[in-house]
Length: 118
Image 1 (cartoon, rainbow, N blue to C red):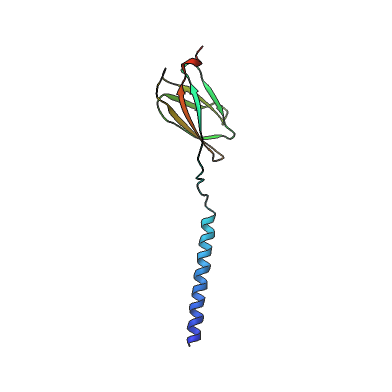
Image 2 (image 1 turned 90 degrees about the horizontal axis):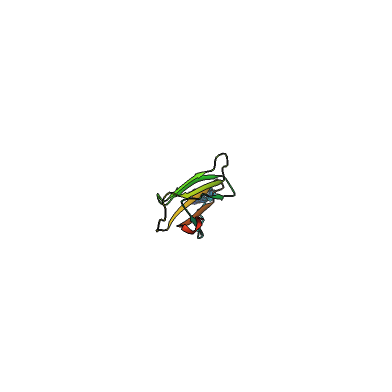
């Protein structure tokens, strides 16, 4: 009888370990967040000129940091972003972020440059 109980407990423990290892395998399929530092790129804009940024993959998402900027994907091209200042001579630095379809995240710090106008 004691042997039967020991075998039953051993079987329950083995099933528990097997179930736990299966759960760990399921979790390992989840994509983890890359905690590396994401570099910020510097860019200057002006009111009278449009800048175009070309990305290696189609753009999925754009977030502008302030009302000083306007941006849009170029027509019929999924990986080109048009960017321009909406306000002349803004003094504060602003930013914008882009996520592309390959999952890459790009961060840009933006300053106004009145010397770009000639």
